[in-house]
Length: 172
Image 1 (tube, rainbow, N blue to C red):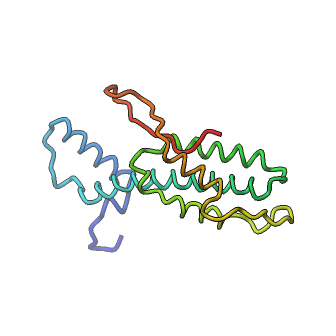
Image 2: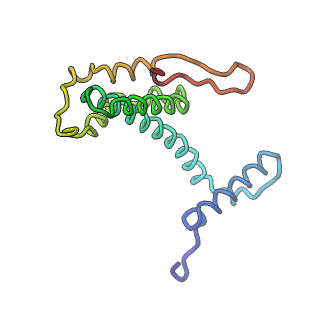
Image 3: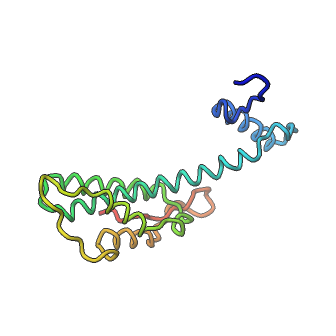
């Protein structure tokens, strides 16, 4: 660190900063008086917001991977890897479903995720070009993802502290 500069715990050691801030917040929540100047409110707010963005990114990534594997299976139906792609797509959908929360629905752009999945497809597979996919954006994989995001499967009961979650993608 250059001489005369002030150390910024947030920039210098994020783990130490997080532990210190969480300790201060817990103590304050318990009613203990803490020095408000020690609470790094701007960075606390940024980190909390970042947690939400990170969860959204994870769900979008899993949905993109599911779409990519579904498209591979559809475009190269005779490839020996089709059962693996289908199994992977089911796993990605299941993982996305577990992490999905209702507020994500309005933030997930399925058309963009579908375009990303299309861009991730290889030009050929084992020397074979892909079969054409019927008219974007009405492809079966995109329709399946859209139907799944609009489903309303809920878990947990009201009043018991459980979070309600909605199904993201079909299980099959």
